[in-house]
Image (cartoon, rainbow, N blue to C red; front, side, top):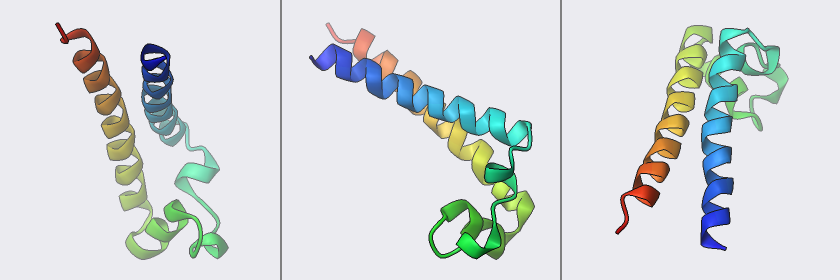
Length: 82
C-alpha cells in the first residue's frame, strides 16, 4: 500500500508542477490573469492584486519548480532506501 500511495503523491507533485509551469507559459487565464473579484478566496488572484502580474508569473514558475523538485526528491528517497 505504501508504494502505491507514494506513486499517487509522486504523480500529484510532478504532474501539478508540470501543469503549473506549462499553464503559465501558455498564458492560461486562471493562472496568469485570475479575476480580481476572487482575491479574498483565490490565492493567485490575491498575489496578482498585491504584487502584480510579473510577481504572479514568478510565483507560478517557482511553485511549479518546487513541486517537481519535491516529486524528484520523493523518487530519490524511495530508491535510495536499502
